Amino acid sequence: MNVIVVEAGGSYRCNGAMELCDSDGNCTALLQEARLCRCGRSQDKPFCDDADLSLDVPPEPLHAGEVEPASADGTLRIRTRRDGPLKLEGPCEVRAEDGTVLMRGTETALCRCGQSKRKPFCDGTHRQIGFEAA
Image 1: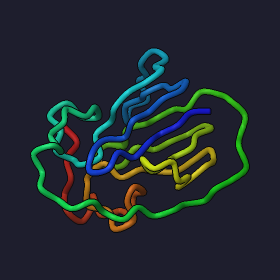
Image 2 (image 1 turned 180 degrees about the horizontal axis):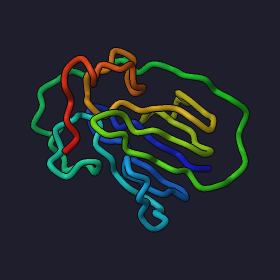
Image 3 (image 1 turned 180 degrees about the vertical axis):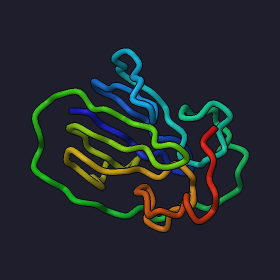
């Protein structure tokens, strides 16, 4: 199972069979693990550079999404949307650091601007604040 752990005040810690693709559809080789930015401040987007460590923010509540029965193994494609969310396509499970399952399924979008009101999921706030991923 491909698992994404939402680290408290930090990154998305991704483990499993994953491809990371840019908004033009160019994909990297198969990855087994990665830390992706969710605060919007990394200088190495989509990867986390620990910019969040300098932030003095209290832990935020995480919202649950749809939890489907466990899906078959397969490759998870993580597509970076231009100045938008991380689009997940393929079997995955999104968990809080304490192990709580927030979402299980084959498709969702995770916030990477750091401003969503439905963290860790995208609510479209990136368009309102003018988030730039580059």
